[in-house]
Length: 305
Ligand code: NAD
Picture 1 (cartoon, rainbow, N blue to C red):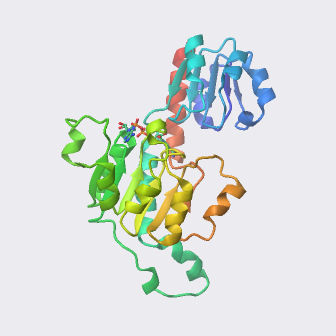
Picture 2 (picture 1 turned 180 degrees about the horizontal axis):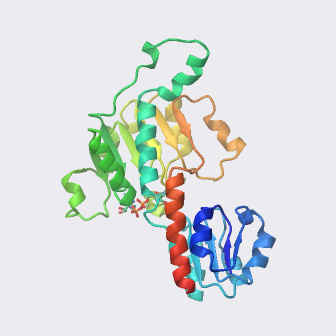
Picture 3 (picture 1 turned 135 degrees about the horizontal axis):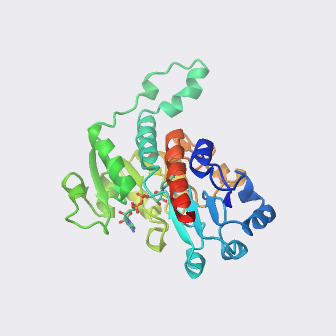
C-alpha cells in the first residue's frame, strides 16, 4: 500500500503507481488518527512538507520501506528514525528549481517597477504616472546568498537579463566553474553593494537569522530582499522595521518562521507597500508539480519493486 497524504499530480498517480494499492487523500496530513490507521499497511508514504513524519508516525508503519518527499526540504521528516529502521527517504531534488528561479526573477521585476503598488491606485482612477516610475533590472546587481542548485539557476537567468551577479557561499569550492561568471563576495560586501538580494541557503544553525538587523542596516537604500529558502533565515521583525523606514525598498517572502502564517502573525505586514507574500509556493507550479510527482512516483515504485 502507498499512502499519499498531500496533493500530488493525479495523472502521475494513475500512470506510475496504478499497479499498487494507493490511498490518496490530500488532506490526510491533517487527519492524524486516520493517517495512523493507514500507516499500519503502508509500504510507502508520500508527503509534502505539512505531514509531520515523526518517530511516532514512523513506528506505526511497521511495513514501511520508503518515504517520498514531494519537494526538497526534509525538515518535517525524522531522518534518524528512518535510518534506524532502514527506511529510504527520497526528496525530489532539482525538480522545482526552474519554478523557484522564475519566482525570484518575476518578483524582482515586479518590485523594482513598483508594479505591485500601482494596481490599487489605478483601480481608483489615480493616474499618477510619475509616482509609479520604477527601475529596470538590467545593469543592477543581484546578490545571491547560497549558490547551490537554485542559486546557480537564478544567477544564469539574471545574467541573461543583463544583471551583474555576485554571491556569498563559503562552502562552494573556489575552483567551481560557476565562479568564472559570478563574483564571490563576503556577506558584508554583498549587503552593501546589491540592489536585489535573494536567499538560497538551507536552514541550519549557521544560517538562522543570517538576515538580521545588522545585515539589513548595511544594505543599500531601496534594496529588495527575496526569500524563497526557509523561514528563520530572515528576521521578519527586522525586515518589517526596515520596510517601514523605506530603507529596504521591497520584499518578496514565500517562506516564514511559522507556517502557515496565522492571521495574527500576518498583521505585522499589513499596510506595508511593495511587499509580496506567498504561501510557500515559489517551487510549486503546474509543471514542477508534474516533474516532482513523476520523480517521486518513479523512485517509490522502483523501491517497492
Ligand atoms: P542546495 O543544497 O543546492 O544549495 C544550498 C547552497 O547553500 C549550497 O551551495 C551551500 O554551500 C550553501 N550554503 C550552506 N550554508 C551556507 C551558509 N551558511 N552561507 C552561505 N551559503 C551556504 O539547495 P537548493 O536546492 O538550491 O535549495 C536552496 C533552498 O531553497 C533550500 O533551503 C530549500 O529548502 C529551498 N527551497 C524552497 C522552495 C520553495 O518552494 N520556496 C522550493 C525548493 C527549495
